[in-house]
Structures are given as C-alpha cells and as structure tokens.
Image 1 (cartoon, one colour):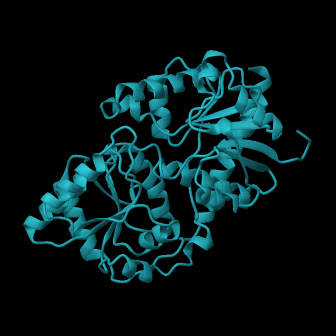
Image 2 (tube, one colour):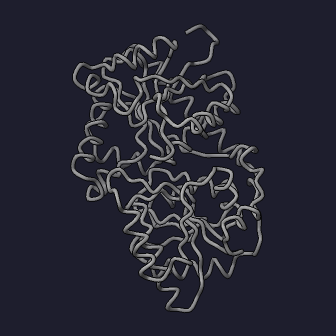
Length: 391
C-alpha cells in the first residue's frame, strides 16, 4: 500500500432479498465513507456472477465503490477450504489480483491463514440468546463461524453496547480486539425525490397508516402486530399497518404463507397489508409519511429501520429491547414482545396524535451522527491494520 493511497477494503455482497438490513447497512456505510472520509477508503465489493444486477448497479453508483464479479464468491464457495486448510484460496487470489489491503468479513470466513488484516462483523448474537428460533444446523454453522473468526484473531466489530455485552458474556475467554460501531444513516437525496403522497396513493393506503418494513423472519415478530390489530377490531378502532420486505426465510420456508393465511382467517387483510419488496425510494416515501414506525422484533443487533426512522424524526413504537432503548434514547413508545394489548394502546395514541398528510425531511445534525459512524468504522479498520503484523 502506497503512503497516502486509499485503503482498498474488500467487502462481499449481501443480497437484498436474503438480508435487506445487511444490504442497506453496506450501502449506507459506503455512502458515509465517501462523504465523510473521502479519499481514505476504496470499497471493493466482491459478488458472485449470479448476484442481482440491479442490487449491484445501485451500489456501484456510490462514489469510489468498485464491483468485482467472480465465481469465487458464489454462495459458500471456498468455505470448506477456509476451515479445513486455513485459506479460501480462490477468494484470496481475487483479493491479490485486486490489490486488497484489508478485508471486512460479514457472514463470511476466508481462513485463519488469510494474509490480510480482517475485521469480522458480528451484527448480533441472536443464535445464542434465542436458540429456539434456529434449526440446529443453522445454529451450529453460525456458532462455528463466530468461533473460527475469534480463534483466527480477527478484530471483532459489534453494532451496539448491548451486542458487546452479549459477546463478552458468551465468549468470556476471547482476547480479540473489539470495537463498537453504531450505524447511522442519511439517505441519498436521489432516494428522496419520489413524492410520498403519490406513493401512498399508488399502494392505496389511507392517510394514516403505520409502517413495518421488517423482513419476514419469525423473530421479527409480526405476530404481535396482528394480535394487536385483532384487539383493536374488538375495540372498534380502525388501524392499518403497511408491511414491506422480503418474504423469504431460508430457515423456515412457508412461514409467510402460513402467516398471511392467519391474517385472512382473522379478517384482517384490509388492516395488515403486505406490499412485498418495493423500490428503496418507495420505502423512504412510506417511512416519511407514516403515523409511526413499528419494530416488534424479538432481537436486534442495531436496527436499520430504527436508524432510518430517526433520520427523519418519525415517531417509533418499538419492542422493549435493551438495544432499542440504547438506540432510540427513550424517544419511542415501548411494548413487550408478547404484549399485544400495550401495542394496541400505543397504536391508538399514536394514531390520535399523528397529523394527516405530514411529510418529513432529514432532521438537523443527522450528518454529525453519520460522520461519527464513518469515523468509528475507519478507526476500527485502521486499528486492525496496525496490529495485523503482530498477530
């Protein structure tokens, strides 16, 4: 690496359809680095040949991001070699060809003999706190992945103090350097050009609605929202919840269809509306115009949807998790993950408090939070590079 040259930092693509939060995280990280650490990093995004063109095109438009397609990054290619032989040789060859200086591992392990400094991102430790939500094989794979990264001396990046506490609880003997990097976002102006009123009309939503943009995994806990809607029907109070996001859960196929069948059986199909995967400008449009964001999740590392709501000053109704209280700093209504009655009460109050046809814009000082996010990430990578020769 030449003095003064940007750090060529390797990332692997996270498909939006599999993990929208991870895709959005990397997209916002790239944008934050470009805006607040210009010339310091060149994100090199490695993707498989079959990854979605539209996803990658959107990321390639961010300044300094370079997309590299290779069969070495198809699915779990190279993982067996990384674990058994200590190195994913095909991936390492691509890193060498692209003159990589450091590697960011997100749900990917390239081997304990990887000849580059590496930061391993542990978004959360859900598989340890809520093991019943994972099939045994999936839980074992995730735990094995974390343990080999720990054993390989990676710098471990966590997304919250809550996650850091979990890490220390479950891996008390780990001596790895750790870093807490709190995600923050300020959406690109290009994503805010869509008229929210037109998007609301396009999806035939009422003037007042609540927004739930969580992927359809069981732990995201859409169930408590439907239970709250059923309570509101009994009370004679009409509330509409608009949900968006992927319906694919590789660990529990068919869950979405079963869930929506339940919604229909309760007669709530006009009150719980699922729009599927929608364009990001539409996501932001619906967020900016809603009465409040709902995040009922049973577990979060650091919620992307909460950060996006905070960036516009959107009211929030959140499950009562330590990380949600850390993230929202008390600026939200909270309910227990199995308490639809309190959620129903919050929905009534938020609906009565909300204005009709309000359109929100980014809040003041949001750039300061995004700049801190970029700085913390940059310091984490720089630190891993400094200690690498001594590992």
